[in-house]
Length: 506
Image (cartoon, rainbow, N blue to C red):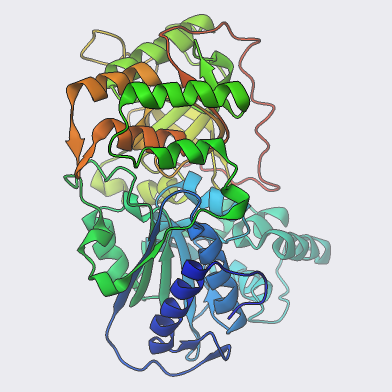
């Protein structure tokens, strides 16, 4: 199996069952070798478990074992020329933030969108990419010195990013990426983290690309809003589902996970849960029973709410306490991408923006105006190449107003809502060091008595919200906002070692 660590019983059982699936696909993890696939039938499986059950650890161990067997991990930034004997694996997440959480744990993940759409490289610079990937000799490129190529190699060996390596050599994205195309060649194996966020259309797209697909998900989370409370893995046969139930030793003393798992008690009422949080806060500073929203946190980790009206009120309160002008954004204000507003004839521009991380739900920080009217300089949180310039349409919703206020807008481009507060539904797939949950909203959900997939909605909302916190949970019980300790800042946003830019949308 694997000698890097000892898996728990349920993890080991899941590992062995998944090994059987992969053996049918022609990858033998026990003998670490590739064999001819045993058939053409596709296979879909799922690893399910609540927070702390070790899903990500199991995923990481499977990736190591697949790499040891000779399987190539395919990222979203470059894919080498196909080889007859090549086997491929892609590790995917629905959002940039979810992919970045995996990358921070050493798993080379990319977004679903980046694997569906692949970049088209200029043939001259593709020779460099092939050399960096170990599939060709070191090329001689007019205009690039030996020193520049060595910089590219050093960068690639450290970060495994072809675009970053080419940028380190002094090239711009527009030099070596000429466009984007929808993938026309399938891959072999796909691992999808945060699979509770998948909708049917994404699931169908992935099954077209991957004959062997493994979903990792948490059945206690919220289903996509267009799925009527259902998650895609619920349609799988019982034999295809591998459940993890044990909370691992390194997680067992985490008070946030204790609270999350307490929600499974069918007798637990909202008031009981809130008392439990207050008691935890007295003995462990990782849980805070807060009397107000801390405005300083809102610029990097939004307040999590249930109701849109609450979200809008908090956003406007955040802007007021920072003295933000009504007709412009301040540098450092958080935004959420609400999609790309471009006509079909600008499909290539849409793919450019989406491939750089500006997909619906992406968290972004405003860095200032771009070089062209209507453009904004942006930092895409969790993206591999985070800094981008794009035509922007910014909408700031106002309390009791049907139409949002638009401080400025390009004629077309990436659309944004303010990101100081977000709904709990939209927070799925993300994690932050500290998370503020607006408890009065969950109290309203509890009083309404709404049920989703057989469980009180307030419990699902609470579970998702508190498990977004990596280090500290703030359970905010009053509708009150602190004063900021200082102005908004952007100096904490470090760009990637080499930054690409998209200034071609006009």
